[in-house]
Image 1: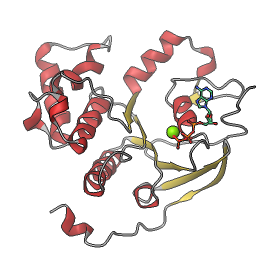
Image 2 (image 1 turned 60 degrees about the vertical axis):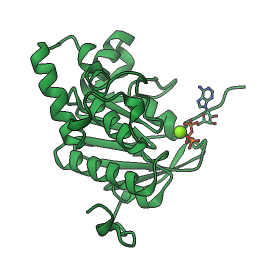
Image 3 (image 1 turned 90 degrees about the horizontal axis):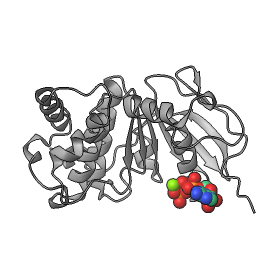
Image 4 (image 1 turned 180 degrees about the horizontal axis):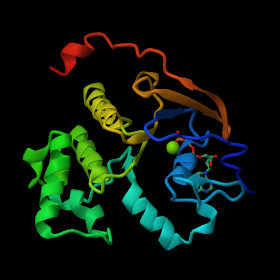
Length: 225
Ligand SMILES: Nc1ncnc2c1ncn2[C@@H]1O[C@H](COP(=O)(O)OP(=O)(O)OP(=O)(O)O)[C@@H](O)[C@H]1O
Ligand SMILES: [Mg+2]
């Protein structure tokens, strides 16, 4: 039997948007992210990434576009254990054909670790960090090639609310700096950090609209001081 993970889904994401994708388990959110992130191709239908129909590109071409234009953040962080923060974050640069001098790599890794307030952890092993810190390293890794698009599949799913809020603040900052962000989340509170929410059900988009106003959690402002 063939499961149809997505069906009749049609939408656009413009540069600079911050979109949250919501919906029950199995509704097709991750499948949609895989397609948006060029990790999977739709069996029917078309997907244009920056005006290019990806159906016409081979796997190597897709991998190159991914490496240079898309940063991925996952629920389970997906860092290499027993490997330093530095080595985790530099990885996408090493896969980039435009690869840089050693000195520039070090500068860039430090820059992105500063953006997530973790420059002081550069020499630690990734498994020595808290969950929130590991997710911030994962965001730094996603940022290191300066991708236009950041895809985050339940980035706060394994975090307590304080660490989750910190991640959302970072994603908002990156969006303000011009990165397009698409994030899957189960939590209404988290989704309200985005500017637009797409609701999925049974492989279809059932609602799509702007976030009007985010509710502030009790004591949230104090939380992060
Ligand atoms: N590799 C696969 N092979 C076959 N079916 C799959 C595969 N991946 C997902 N599916 C099916 O596609 C549908 C959508 O799955 P998907 O992972 O996109 O859901 P989701 O909305 O991300 O769920 P969750 O909230 O649990 O992560 C489900 O019915 C799932 O069982
Ligand atoms: Mg999923």
